[in-house]
Length: 183
Image (cartoon, rainbow, N blue to C red; front, side, top):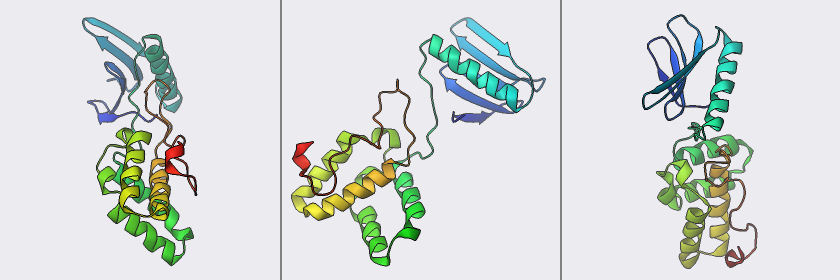
């Protein structure tokens, strides 16, 4: 249940789509509430984790039936945060020289992407960065920048099939010795 969460009057309130919420009502029960214009629908479930899960399932089915796009919350909000998390999770298995290399790559070459929301960093944007770098740096340096960019991008979950965003774990320019223009 990875949806944007706010604190409501009675507890947690999750926004699954525009006008579609799962929240705790004044009696402590989970409910699904959908408002659009003057129309309002509400379905109340019981208390506890089992009913919470039922409420989310019902809200997701309602969203699918009404063709609403779900607003899933990403684990990381910017590409820079994702790269930092990837580095921290990977640094223990690297030799000191590799650590220094990736620190330099992150510091010197990835700042153009670092402040962008993770959903905006797609294959085309990374490829453009790599093509621009290839004009001023060696192919080996561009290859290492590519590896770091993929590492940060893998920190994002696979998007919804209806969101239009590309999965970041596939579809990047070729890696390890293949020419950049063959993609």
